[in-house]
Image (cartoon, rainbow, N blue to C red; front, side, top):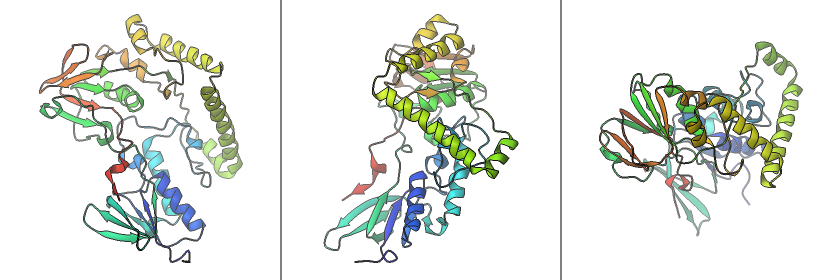
Length: 351
C-alpha cells in the first residue's frame, strides 16, 4: 500500500473546489499532489469572470471556507474583485502555491487499467501520470450560446458574459443583451449607465428580490478581527435562515407565498409601466426557479433609453438581431447572458 507522501494526486481546477481540495489533502498528510489550472491565476469562476456589476448573491460571510473566515469583507454581499482576492489569499495561506500549475488546460484523462493509474494530457501535449484524479472544475465557465442562425454574420462586437471584452467602449453604443437571468440582472444596470440605447431580450421572467447590500464600516471589520466569534455567529444565523428557506421551498411551505408577495411588491414599487410590470411578473410560483437579487435591474429598465422585449432571439443579422416576436433591432454590440455548458465536463475526453 502506498504511503500518503508517495500517492500521486491530481486536482483539476484551482477555483473554490480545487483550493478546498488542496487544503484537505495537506490537512490529511498528502503532499504529492498537483493542482492544474487553465487560467493565469487561481480563483476559478471569480478569476475568469470580470463583467461589470459582478457580485455574489450569497451573503459574504456565508461565502467563505468554514476554516478560513474573512473579517475584512467590505459589504454584506461581496463583489468579484474581493472574492477573487480572498480565494487567492486562501491558496497562499494554505500553502498551495507550490502545488498549483497555471496556464495548463487538461484535455484528456485516460485510466490505464493494467497499472491502475490515470494519464492526464494538456492542450500543449504534455502528459502526467497520477494515482488519483479529483475533478474540481466547476461548471460556470464554458459559454453557452443560443443556437440561432446568423451569429457569425454580425458586423459589430459581440461576446458572452463569461468572456467580457473590456477593450470595447460601450459609451453611446446601441447594445443588445440576450437574456435576463443571473448575469443579466447584474450587467444591465451597469451597461445602462453608458449605452446610447440598450435592448434586453427576455424569454421568461424571474422572481427578483432586493439585494440590499450594506457596507461594513472599518469599525465593524475591526471587531470581526478582534472577536472571530462575531463572524461565526453571523454565519450560524445566516445558515439557519438559508436552510429554513430551502426547506420551505422544497416542501411547498405556505411561507413561499409570502416571498412571492414580497417579490410582487418589489415589481409594483419599482416598475410604474403596467405593460412592463406584466412582462416582468413570472407565471410560475416563487422558488420554482432560482431566485435572483438585484437593486438596479428594475430601475434600469425604467430608463428612457432602455427597452425590455419579452421574447427570445430568433436570428442575428450583420446589422443586429430579429426577435421571436418579429422585431428587428439594430445593434453595435450584442452581449449574450445565456448561461453555461454545464454538462460538458469542460470538454475533457475521459477514457
